[in-house]
Length: 111
Length: 135
Image (cartoon, rainbow over the protein chains, first blue to last red):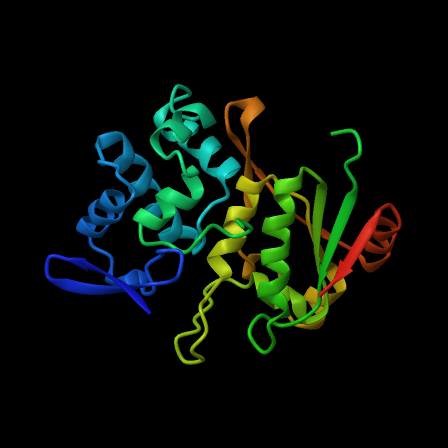
């Protein structure tokens, strides 16, 4: 089992780097995971990450990219609710990468 | 898409005794990414899947009932409940979750997703589908 170190504490992740136990998530985990991908999180990243966590809390699933894009557009405005914007923030795929940082499982249907 | 097919998913089983209900929901969510015309039917014990106030804390299984509320986001907004199945179990629409979808073309107006239909009406609906999957 792989693990990542955050503030001296070890967190188990699966072979693709997703957190095994989403209840253990703390924001610093996202920063460390982003560091591994050579990314530095700014407030725009956090808007999406926090949105995903709220979505999961309410619906118990990580939304598909299409659903995420539409919902972000509704909540944060059309200039952010498009794939170009989201892919610039999360070049590995807004669903996969942002969900990983948010401590959520990979979106349903994402391969 | 011009070659969109009409998919109907029939849900017949209670939510937690078997894996069918959750598997069906996952297939629906995955399939929704492919821009097909999707509808869901809940019949027999399947109507229990949409019950309000589900609590799975004592059976050790994730309560996935909140996920049905996400169906609207996935443009799955044709959800049929068989009237006879509800009545046979002493249930009414008020016992079920209120599922809605938001119509982007009408300034996100909320619209009901659930329709109660008779067994005969459901049979006609089945007849109009390209693909029917039973869970």
